[in-house]
Length: 277
Ligand SMILES: Nc1ncnc2c1ncn2[C@@H]1O[C@H](COP(=O)(O)OP(=O)(O)OP(=O)(O)O)[C@@H](O)[C@H]1O
Image (cartoon, rainbow, N blue to C red; front, side):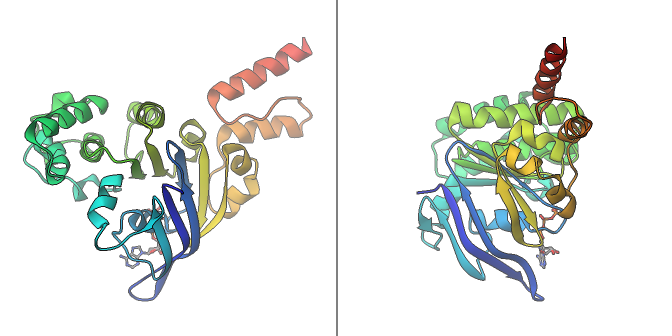
């Protein structure tokens, strides 16, 4: 049984906009999944099906093997937490602390548990210093952290992040990467995220879905996807610098192992150099 599964999922918006067609997607426990695709490829639409915000035109969405129904919707939303692209859509309380408490309070938890969850979420996102601030006066990156903390405080099994790196400064991106990487190991959480920062994907994902015009154009490991540079170009995505550079070196007859991350490339280049010596 998969944690999340979509079977032949299609979605049509009003005005006959076919946003998803025949999407088969699977997420397992404690995995890190990147969904990449150009603007309008259908990433946000897919995510909104994971907790019943949208209803399929056809096909099914199963959470832990169960189809989403009116009756289990509340339970599903405890399992799958989504952070949307625009944090303003998700932040509405007078203080950060109250905002982060909103979700767990709605789950009907007692005050002590809520306070404990809020403290833990603020610490995890490193925003304890913002506790008393007015959310609407925060910077874009700070708001994003507050929105993520609000969802984390509900302790979902799956954290879905739509474009979490958009608008973050380099330090913000680095700490988000570190944060996402702790969730599966430390809490057994599954993280599913979309991004246009294709460079980042090898640092944060074990598995990739490439979407194009409402369909899954490809899926596979980092090696499977980034070895297919023509696929990335065809789906209007960027080919990350590291594999592009290494592919060029190999095309020029240099015996260097393929790599996708900074550390991987460093190892490959040092090994290649040592072999020459
Ligand atoms: N509420 C809506 N009504 C009608 N069409 C919509 C609506 N929301 C999205 N669409 C359309 O559905 C398609 C998929 O949009 P979606 O937002 O899922 O793409 P995306 O991959 O998340 O894009 P981006 O990278 O720009 O965020 C697009 O053609 C979009 O115009």
